Amino acid sequence: MNRPEQRRHPRFRFDGAAILVFDDAEARRTVAVTHYCNVSRRGACVQTPTTAGLDVGSRLHILPQPYLERREVIVVNRQLEFLHLELPDSQEFSEYEVAEMVRGGPVAP
Image 1 (cartoon, rainbow, N blue to C red):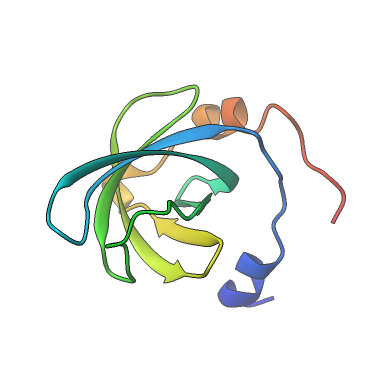
Image 2 (cartoon, one colour; image 1 turned 90 degrees about the horizontal axis):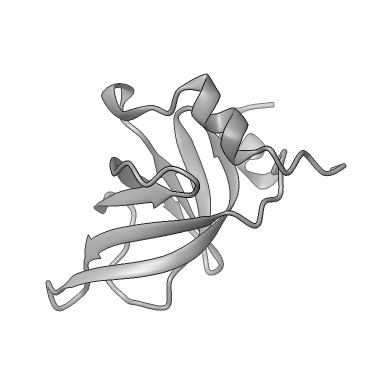
């Protein structure tokens, strides 16, 4: 399965919250609370906030629960309901952090 197909088939469903910090369409600093539905060491899929200004290539910060350590991410795919975010090598989550975030467990595909 290639990378775009993997994004269409989430391995996990979570109720985890994530805080996004970014500049909106009017260049105002915005904080949005959203939920993530998939997470890995190098990225996350989150529900798209209702605020305008996030497009492919946008840089923002994510603070996922239960960790509130700020990580820089880049929007690599924007759909109506979801944003697919990628973390640079220097910002990736540790295996322990991912395990804590997915503690709710996987659901059957």
